[in-house]
Image (cartoon, rainbow, N blue to C red):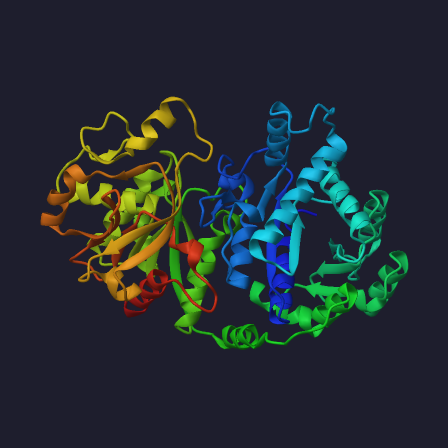
Length: 526
């Protein structure tokens, strides 16, 4: 079923194989016809993860990067839309040499081509490919057909793992395997026999369940792997190894373990379990009324986790809906109960006035503030209104006719917006920045040259730069190529920093992002 944990399973398998000495690459295959995830609402599909090259992808690529510490690009992401677009392009260019182009085998063959391309570019010994959705869905059939064709041509090189849920009806109190049995039969009907079953459940799979599934899918019992709920996602590869998954995988693939080095995750897993002291961190946002907030802000959440664990603290994240501040300013008092707040990225006007009120409250009350992309723009708007006394100050995204566009449309974006050319046209991917050496950001990074990932159409308006500087909003980072403001800091404040980029995409469990690390440090002092 959806959200059963295929992404974490794929990332964990990759981490384990990597720890055994093999070069790996991850691919996420999404079934939708969108070319990428950039035009999908975060509340609908979860966070849009931005790769180093600017690919707007599914949030699972974030897990791949956090687990394997490898960089994902467009090669690590496939959608049905991309596949059809390329097949149609090739047909229009006569690259099929006059042959009729058919859904089968031409669509599956394009999927296979992309898989092989990823393997080649990453020089990977093993490619771990995750299919989104579920086995019974119509839209996954072409990807299953690609798997069948690839397996038929390379029987010793292609292996299939199914992640399936074992429900435990509360009134019965025992696990049930019938849904998994049915899913296996459905996979069989597509011409695929699973080589491995990962049994997701609240509690470990019982021996009886493993035996039943083993009989149904004609697999040795040691290939039925228990995958229960654990303390954190970083415990998943550790638990898999307790089930001997790594060795079972290598044995199934006819490979030997070149080494065995999962000690970094084991030590990390043990450390975070011992942490008891909590710290309250507020996320002030607006995507709280639809799908789980955890999907919408997953990279932000994990970055908070990484930084708090680094400081031996357990984060307690409070979800603070900015729209309620617009209705009742008295509710801003709840910000007194947090050690610091983060305003993350987002688009559109809804809830932004409440964010401005939250930024004002934290500035005046010296509460640590960290603004990410939109959060940086909110900080700038608030400072302009209440310190520079430009009462109409705003962003041209939020109020196009504003008298004081302190945040304005990027020059190269105006034509895109006018033509409604929205897909993959923002400022995307890694861009360099030069830091001022007297800034909080420089102290965090310990270097004046950085590279961070972006996803935006609007920017700090340099027309107002001198006025901001004179009143205490310090421009701490600049893109040297285009003279774009990347970081602003409020001088008369313990830690009030806004960044135009998305540092959450580069945080790792063992290496917290420097800015998140220092933000939490400021929260501890408060």
